[in-house]
Image (tube, rainbow, N blue to C red; front, side, top):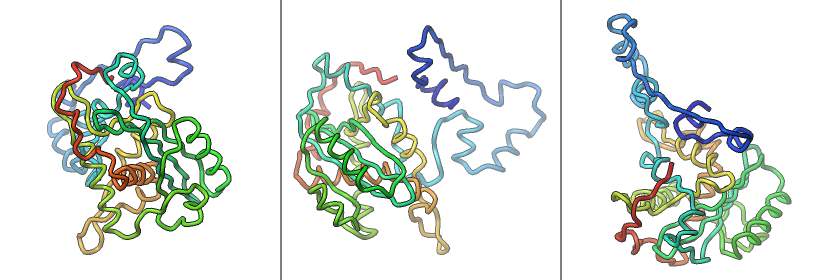
Length: 276
C-alpha cells in the first residue's frame, strides 16, 4: 500500500472521496542517511537479487527478476480514459473482445478490451473472483456484454464447454501458443512510446479491477528450471488469471484481423497526456 498510496496516489475510495486528503511522496536513498555504517550499501546489494535491490535500495517501484512484461510502466500504460474521450482526443470504435480464464482453486477472470480509431487497445474492465462457479462467471460475462458490447471472446484452451456457453472459442494449447500470446501483448506495450504519445495497449486507470491487473502484470515472471531454461514461474502461474485473460482477449482481436498491428494513429501525437 505505500507504493499505491504515495508513489501512484491511488487512494482508497473512503479517503479519496471523504474529504481533503493530501499525499506527498518524499523519495530518499541510502546516500541520504549519514548514520549508516561503511559498506552497508555494498552488503545489501550483495544480499539481494538485482531487481529486488533496485526496489529496496534505489527506490524503483515494481520489477521482478525475469519479468515477462518488463516494459509495462504504470506511468505510461495506466491512463484515465474518460477525460481523453470527453476531449475528443480518443475515439472508441465499439469493436472489442473478451478474454476469460476459469480457475477451480485460483481466481476466474474476465477482461474487456476495446479498440480506438488510432489502433490502440484499451482494457476497459478486469473482473476477477475466486473460481469454481461457472454460473457466476456466465452471469458476469452477460453483464459485461450488456455494458460494453456483444464482442467475440476467447477462453482457456481446455474450457471447451465454457467456450460453448459463452459462444466464444477456446485458445490454442501448448507452450508455443502461450509464447505467441505473450508476444502479441508485448508488441502492443512497446508500440507508440514516443514522447507525448499513448502506447499501443492502455489500461483505463479508472476502470473496475484495473489496478489489480496492473499488480499482476508487474509480478508475472519466468524462473529457471533445473536445466537453466526459463519458464513461467509456477507460483506466478497460480496468480496469473487476470494476465491470462488479457492475453486471450488480445489474441482474439488479432485473429479477427482488427487492425491494431499497424497502430496507424500512433505516429500522430495527442499532445501532452497526463497519466498520473
